[in-house]
Image 1 (cartoon, rainbow, N blue to C red):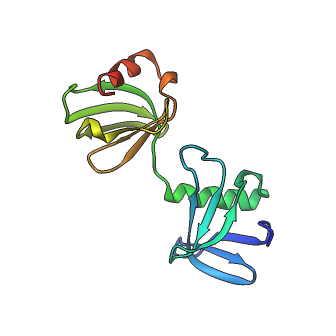
Image 2: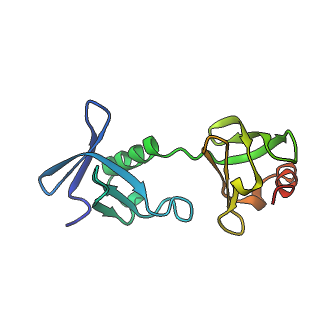
Length: 155
């Protein structure tokens, strides 16, 4: 089956539906295969039971309407703000309150312990707050000097 032979749309309740091979699948979930390492590659559309219905190896190369629907479905499911600057840290002993600028605006959260900062690669970190919200630092060396200095105290 060609990846062009599908339609992804929301129903009146806001749930996503997938029409593929003349079959309608309700309450589907669209997920990235590699959300941090390769966020623009490989997307899977899963049934409500978690079974893969459709694999899209290059979602950004889809026709405009399909691409927009896939990206909209991803955005409704994903929430991982990207830290662009660390403004302040209340203490270098945890728990501490962090004030940060993200791609979604200003945020303040409590870091319970240093183990809540996970290194994904040489330059990528995930910081989890006390409520389990994960913040991404995609490129640690690209952060400003002040932010790197504050982060160095925890790494």
